[in-house]
Figure 1 (cartoon, rainbow over the protein chains, first blue to last red):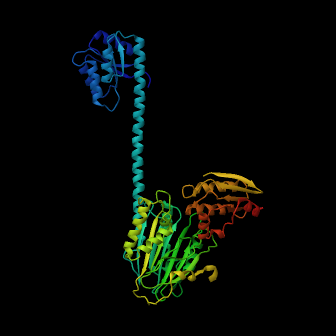
Figure 2: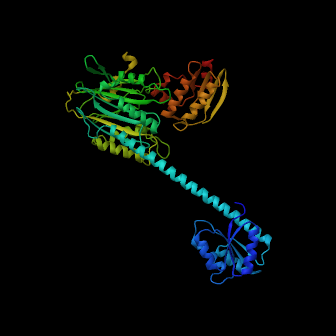
Figure 3: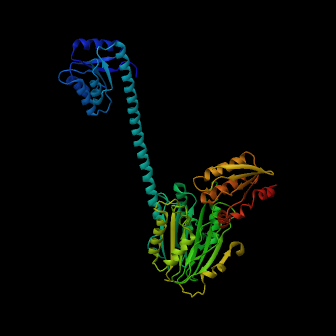
Amino acid sequence: MGHGVKILLVDDDPVARSIHSMLLHMQGHEVVEAADGELAWRLVEEGQISFVVSDWMMPNLAGVDLCRRIRAADFERYVYVILCTSKGAKSDLIEGMDAGADDFLVKPISPEEFRVKVRAGERVLSLQQGLADKNHELAKINAQLHSAHRLVEDDLKAAAWMQQRLLPLLTQHAHGVRCAWRLQPSGYIAGDIFNLFPLDENEIGFYLLDVCGHGVPAAMMSVTLSMVLTPDATQGSPLKRYDAATGRSQVLSPEDAVHELNRRFQSRDDRYFTIIYGVFNIRSSTLRFAQAGHPSPILVRSKQEPAILGNGGMPIGLWPEIEFDCFDISVTLGDRILLYSDGVTECVNGHGEAFGEGRLLAYLREQQSLPLEELLTCLLAEITLWHGNSEFKDDVSLLAIEITGEGILYRSSESSPATQQSYNRRRSDAI
Amino acid sequence: MQFEESTIKNALVVRVHESRIVADVAPQFKEGLIAYVTSGNKNIVLDLSEVTFIDSSGLGALIGSLKAVGKDGQLVLCSARDAVVNMLKLTRMDKVFHIFGTPEEAASALS
């Protein structure tokens, strides 16, 4: 801001007023005059004035009281006030500063002092205006950010709702199995997903998968996979082979399904996923699993130690020549299988210590008499307690399956988890 | 993400100065390794002695780097701690990566 600010000159002495007015005019300023404090106050209140040079002693309203009134008004703009005092009155200075005056001029006023003090006032007002402009701009940007953030948040909430709808129904139990599940995404949406569905009249398929990474890219892939992993063979499912000629379809073995998935999902970037895919055959009461890079499922059998199944394997989409574990177990009434993501075992406490497989096994051993739903509720509570809150760094997912026996050709089994390793049949051995 | 480089025989040994290769450092980790490849290094030994944990994103970055090296060069690992070796074994990545005990053994194998 250069010269030319509008200054309100307040003085009851017309001679002094015209001399000072002339000085300000000569310096290039626009001058508005007022003969007393009350008149000046009305002009300030009207909103056009932000620079006041006022005499101290005046009828109606003294300069110092005008100054107090201006400060008390708390205008949006800053009003710069210079008070003119008589020579040598030190107590006036203190009272004036206390009233909020920015500067003082001692009468008689020298033209040079008048000039520099008005310039100083202009500088302060210019800075003040700059700050006000910036604040205004920031407030505008802040509002834009806020609305953009809300838009993204609403989108994410909608996406989360859509993702939840892809999960199995809470009460789902198909032909002799009951399932329960929990999904706690690390943000709004998860890279973990799972499902359970009948593949045909004898077989039930189920999976739990974890797309590497978090957030929207991982969630988009998990949703895509959930669509692809369908028991509807006519949709080109990697789980069944459809023969258009006969109109019949055949359930693929878990290993063939995993090979097919790996063929389809070789990605150019580093995105990949880990999966446990299981097929439960109701007639033979056997479960066949393929384990591709995913943490081992746990078998919980009444009055026995919970057992870890499988020896791992490569994730899907990382390497074309995939190698993974495939194994069968015979199941009996009441057996439970827990599938989970590494967000469970790798969940750390305040000291950076992971929850770990050991704690998970111990929990399942101690709480095996709990009904399926409560088992997962309490397990999630246990993991949340371990972490300190439910804002997990990675998605936490749990899928528990219980053999209920409805519709099953029940077969007594001598098998025990201790001999589970003997069921393991690595693909390399199988070929 | 910091790397310390040294040369043994005709191999570039890259020591990773990071204890956890996880999601937030994985992109830098991969970029750094690929930069070695694009600047003409054919034989790279990745010294993992300081690494205590690799998560799924870290594993993706590691495999991505291996793919970037392609057939023109070699990327091998050495001095991996038990936790890291177990993770590589569980995901069968020990079939994809050569893992050596020391940088010297790795460098000799590449020579």
